[in-house]
Length: 387
Image (cartoon, rainbow, N blue to C red):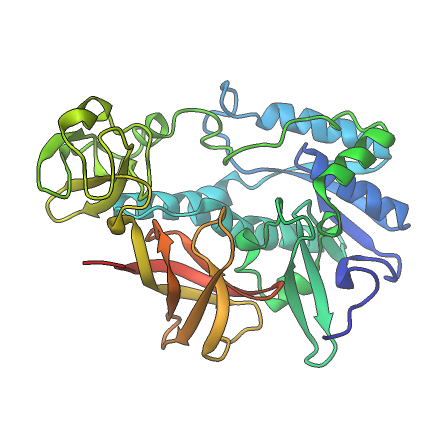
């Protein structure tokens, strides 16, 4: 086991006192991050990142409220806070790619791209210009220096229910070497307790869900503003037309809600499912503009035994050697045993001894070796468990 630097590796403990810029989001995790660093004696400066401004005065985007909360935290902690607008960078580097992927029928993960392009690139660059030696965020992950190799490793957060290493898997050595994740050492309950104990105004603030430019609004309503509708048939595995979809871009594999075909459940059971089993999106045929649906969560069409990925990004700077690892093909799932076969030009393949559910092109396949996140790539294709 490689030696760590201080308690929790690079996350603190025995570090010399430094000027650290913290991304204050208005949430409790980043607030406690700033407090912990102040407690260690570091010079802490807060930055609030504004990443979206098209409709930030609407009921769905809480940017203005979040800044007030972040400023209140800075006041209680006695630190400076700066409001920085990264909206133009976000639109060019994250949102444009988000739309391209949806228009191509894939389901992207903008949080992964936002971390790589905004929070740990644009924000990191800005912090360095302010004279920062490190940056810190409220992510539930850890960084450890491997003394044997001299490289930084990205580790899972200690709270398995909150671990966010999946979203951080595209970070490179330069980024990790400048980054601290203090709350990665804690469980969420402890973070809440600390916030309450020191009287932070957002101690009981609800965790944010989703990304700002969508917020709590209906997803299809948001995409309608940017992607034109191209209705087409919804068909089951027997080829029967069950209804009409509003455009393949608006659906993702494994989706259960919003299909508009609940009334046809009684038409007959699908393979392995009863009359009243829910419908799930199983396939999207862009060539014929057909949405294929099946009944039952464990329908064979929803299961894949392998995947290929491209646009790979490896934390160590190079692909791991071929062999046995674990992987996530979506955030909210347990690590799944797999075999890695690295390819050329930033591609790789994963084979799974146990079929995986709703492997979705556009999402990230992230590789792990125990608690170490090795990196990953964007899922390109999935091999069905049955044809």
